[in-house]
Image 1 (cartoon, helix red, strand yellow):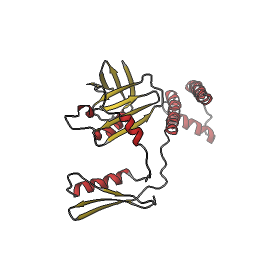
Image 2: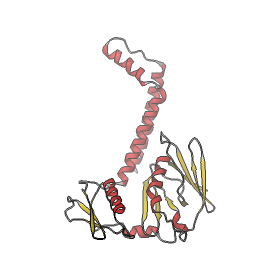
Image 3: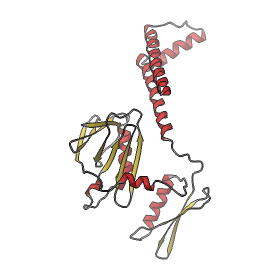
Image 4: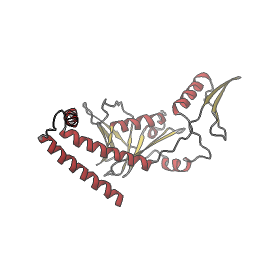
Length: 271
């Protein structure tokens, strides 16, 4: 059996990002699945309905032990308030399982197809380019397209997107309802930088180090206000700082944590 653990918030993003591109055609049963390619450094999710396709790329903070492909279907799912529970995705003997590790544990199992019946990786490889790009607010664009789809009666839902060479100018989305013209104007976003996956991974790694350090301090000082108050009284000259046993233990523990983080940081920089 091969498996991977992911945070419940990430799993929810996968479902939201890909479930809209699943086929509802009973003649295309394989396209009712979400495909997850688990690699050492990332997880790539795909969905396709024959007309549209979705993809999500999730960089991993820690290398995955197993590499595999899983086919799953959307399941009823809701994040917990804290958002720190895990979801385990595994494959074994042609079956894919999704285990929800929340308070009420649930497990869903799917018999996997051999493939989508098309080379989705090659499609994205060939089509993921642009002769021109313009950056827009996704919510504004979605609202405008939703308005157009609701106000005209073309069974093929045809629309035209007008983009200017000057990328600071608005784009216009247009439909025709018989002889009635319906337009939506969307302002572009300026100075939008493309997400650098490597920088994002490093940012997540640094966050995990800070979290580790905070946990080390928190494990010794359940109430940091008490320590702060003693230090403030000493600084003000009202009462000399009285060192307690927990202070000595905390200092040793925090220094040990710093040493571990130092080794981790310098090991990576050398490599």
